[in-house]
Length: 289
Ligand SMILES: Nc1ncnc2c1ncn2[C@@H]1O[C@H](COP(=O)(O)OP(=O)(O)OP(=O)(O)O)[C@@H](O)[C@H]1O
Ligand SMILES: N[C@@H](CCO)C(=O)O
Image 1 (tube, helix red, strand yellow):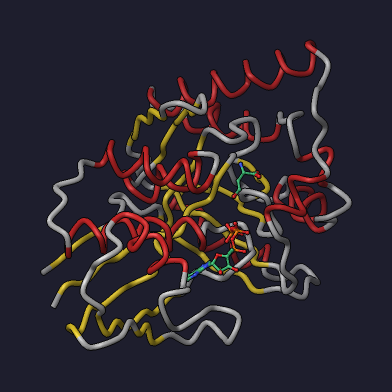
Image 2 (cartoon, helix red, strand yellow; image 1 turned 45 degrees about the vertical axis):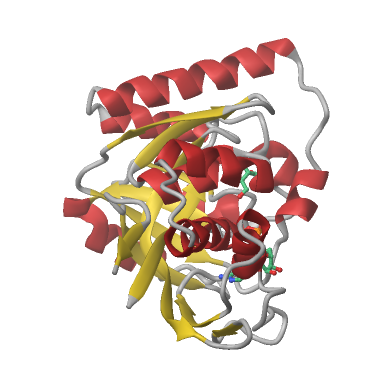
């Protein structure tokens, strides 16, 4: 049975806005049970997510190959919707792979990235969902490019807020322009973040995560818990805290060795959401037949 497994993704890492993303060990899984006379996708994501060809996964696949034979599919997903953990990206990637497998398209990861980024608009969720690990990507509205690097022995202490925050609403509060000085501070911090990850200097890398001026400042009223978690995390022995994608999820990165202690300290915060202690997914999408 064709099985497609796609990791959750946490985008931005602060100054890496719309460019950097991390694949996490939280998954959407599709099991293709076989052909039938109509499309059907069984899931437990609620009535707002269609169970027929209007489902984003199937819409994505049918946009690539309109005459695919309808299938009975079972989807399970631990990736919460509208929480900044790449749920829609995981669905898009799963849909591209469904068409790739059923239609024998022979798509490369680069091909899948080009298709996905046009649907998502920015590469920092779809790229790590494809490649896994720590991914740095760019998209100039023509082509996308991405480089993946392993990030070992790092955990993501993930606070999933109890209320949704749509990416569209979170992007609506961002300015069209920012002062050059702010842009240089942020882009240079992102440069050091990437270079430090590649050199294994994770303390330097993730200190840069808290130097964003592209988006977190403007979003702070939408995610008041970000400042609270960041302040508490500064009292723990962690790398740093950032707004996961467009939020409302907040991620604190910590070394594997210190993850349990830091997690126990952070879950004591008086917040209404839930906490997960997640590993970084070394691999992106996994397909088994
Ligand atoms: N696992 C899924 N299966 C099918 N459709 C999905 C899934 N996740 C998201 N979608 C579709 O995508 C739409 C947008 O989802 P969501 O709000 O999660 O995306 P987002 O805000 O862009 O990103 P994020 O999930 O990272 O916050 C949903 O309304 C739903 O129709
Ligand atoms: N970089 C995007 C991520 C969306 O998941 C944003 O912050 O709006």
